[in-house]
Image (cartoon, rainbow, N blue to C red; front, side):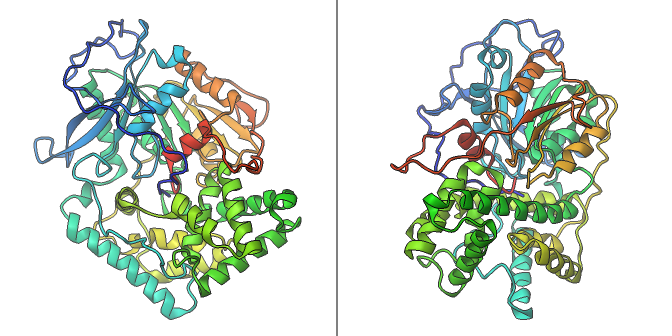
Length: 529
């Protein structure tokens, strides 16, 4: 699942226009990393931001249809933070997930968050996959599809469910009308083949790859297609490759409900601050009463039950948002004040043009990648069954994916990413991750021969490295520095175990919380990713 996260923690704006004069690359021996140096075909220009002043940008053409390499071309937007050390380990391609996530800023974040000695050895390369962001063409199938106030995501009866089906069908039809010539080529396998075009343009014989969320699946597919081109492969919050994509979304529904219960339990533990009761079940019941009240009268004319779910869903990805969400919850329930809730919706749930683009690519990739039920009766039965056990976001997620029931392209067969030809890969997985439940990390660990699995025990966040956990970050840095992975913790399938960070504390009295690496990362990863 994918949607851009809130804007509480902005990452900066461009501070300099593009320039054509770029200093020559630092001389380094690349034989051990990328192989004999080849001449790059890319032209890099400065595109730094306040947060990431060293960023450079370029673009590369790739075939729309890789089976027709001399046919129509499309353009991918790239970013780079260059290596500065004499020891050069080649390009490190980074991806934030989605599908539909823009990765250009992530290059700056990764380069700035790794230990300086490690980051200096890599050209950290970000990219907008086909259809995304600054790549061309960029998809926007139906602007305003998520404009407030939407119908309640939980159908009140057959008529409401038919209306929801109609909205999903309208989105799929609009995408087909606008991009019918492009949609057959917006898929994970095509995106993976794009990465090999990028590799060649970078002049590298092999790449290093670091992906979060859906980026783990993209990396696994690339590794399956081009195992000889992979030098190092680090994957954080792993998609289950055996459930692409319908089954994975059903699994998410149960996991997000569990994380919402964890949020309610956290609020109950801080009853002295929020005044919503000390019993987690009672706090959760109060949230659903708030939901019902907003169904009758949307908060500020902006937040109905669907928007409420959009607002609180990011808390299932990152518990650093819990204090903000709890304050909005308490203000609405205790003070009858919807203003903080509306502000939280604007920060975490509201959509802009970039979100419309991300969602368009999300649907295009997931609907094309694999088979989805074409009979709405299957969706109806499955989602009502799950909703009875996990009501928090089941129908919200169902409508998010429902265009796939009516998608105008054919469906592909997902590749088997089982791989015995790779160097050791390093996987990271939190035990309570909702977006990519733990079973996915364990499954890919078994499928990638020689891989190692680092587990964050008790962790519920999605995207766990470079987010403040020193134990996890040490394993990532050691791997990127040396290629070595941990071997065997004595604790089941995990090769290493790190304790999760403590849950956050309520906001201080001045109600201002300084941005953390975790909040910055999750602003880049977004949610539904």
